[in-house]
Length: 130
Image (tube, rainbow, N blue to C red):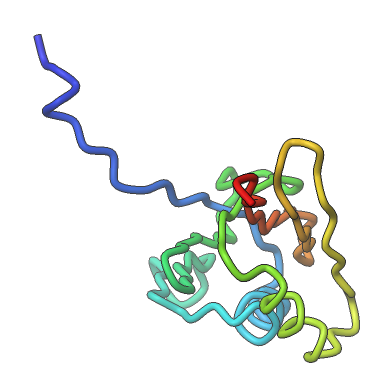
């Protein structure tokens, strides 16, 4: 029998569906500040599969049918939600103006919706010790 001491979970990487590469780049790279980690197509006319990252967060974006479902919710834990909010508001993105909400379960959250209706929930824990 394998014990839990032998298992090390490293990270989770969601795959989100995209339908327009230009809109995905505008939103994830230009607006949210992610960088392209890799791009892959099986041939020149094949759908794009792209990895993006910012800090410790990685997301895969895919044009492939069956990869991801529009409307997926992804929670991204972070520190510095106010700074991220200021950064996004300063960009004056024409399709979205995010706000921060305090939740009763002890987080402050800012939800942004990508052009494909995926929901990215940036979530910062509220320090209850002070």
